[in-house]
Length: 115
Length: 114
Image (cartoon, rainbow over all chains, first blue to last red; front, top):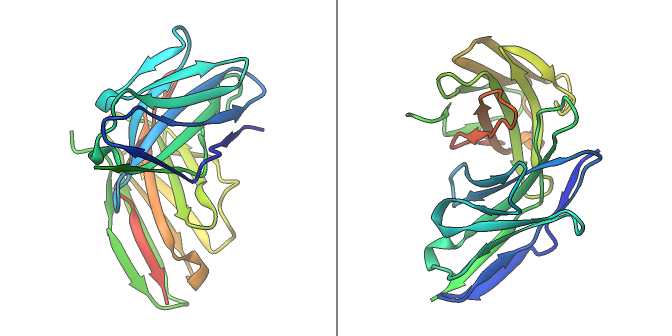
């Protein structure tokens, strides 16, 4: 079985400061990992993904995420937060070694960036 | 590229009525997913199709829910009869079945069953 944990319901950060949104995962095989962002009354937008290779993945809007196999983590980061980054962020995982193509999502973390 | 298109965007209905949600995937994508989002349960996969064939419907709540994909450019999710506990946002997502299969989501249908 595959699962994702986002331990923080909400993260607050001041504009211009670095931000981190945490994600840990569990799969039996090798993971494919994703981050999505959801703005109010909108669908989920794809931010970035980890497949294999470089542990630091760069995505849209200046976001990046670091894959850490030993800690089974895939934390989302941004060096300097913007007020417009305020949204709901979802981490998702798929086990690349199974035939099941569906993603398992975390519960989401609300990011609030204060001006 | 138009992205994934869903209709209606909002639906209000009374308990016992039939509800049909519609989805048009991104052209060229051959996998389609239906998700439901609620405050209590988060994002749940209901069913997914590959090449118009249902592959995994283990997330479909009960027999009141059914989904079809008659062709590569159209899918429906039907609830009959609807109940207040079905109130949620329903998302459709599509992907191209390569090794990774990044999913792209539609804007969702917000359903309220009174």
